[in-house]
Length: 215
Image 1 (cartoon, rainbow, N blue to C red):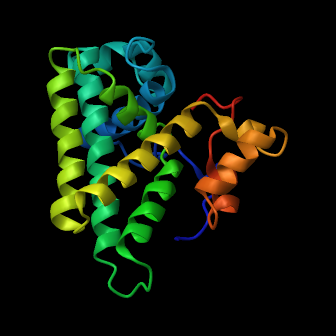
Image 2 (image 1 turned 30 degrees about the vertical axis):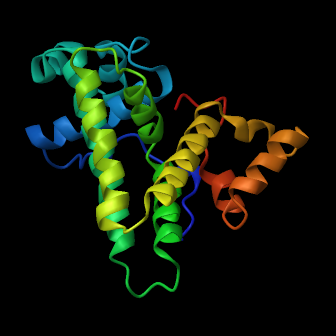
């Protein structure tokens, strides 16, 4: 696994260089990063463009002017989350110097993405919006892309790919529920964490979002 990332290092948006004006593309990336954090924490229905604007440090009219609708903003957040997911998977897959099996390298990459607040939950919310006329088809396409990565690029058989997705969904639920707050005090939750993260538990306890954090 890569070096441990502390909660203090997790960031919603990169801090701009105050000595220069941000480009429109940099500003867009900043808004999308804020959208991932807010949509991840509050869901599609519970988030407004004003919430994202405040988190990104820009005006709400600017967000609307750039993305035109909350729907488009969510699609951008979902696609960015998916792109980041696939990027770290492919980097892990290409790490021929590692002695770890492919599935282990990809699993560690998935866990390390917890340092990007809201990414796992934004994707989870997207998977639950299958009935939305625009987001639903985009989410299904993205989910199929992840499956095809496991099958075609990572070389996992169908049962291995199914198990990997199932464990990933369990991790998403654990993170979204902020179950880490009950680690050590609730025996059932403690047992669950130890079963899911036998070698990565200190890292998880360090970077998992807490109940008193906004995302």
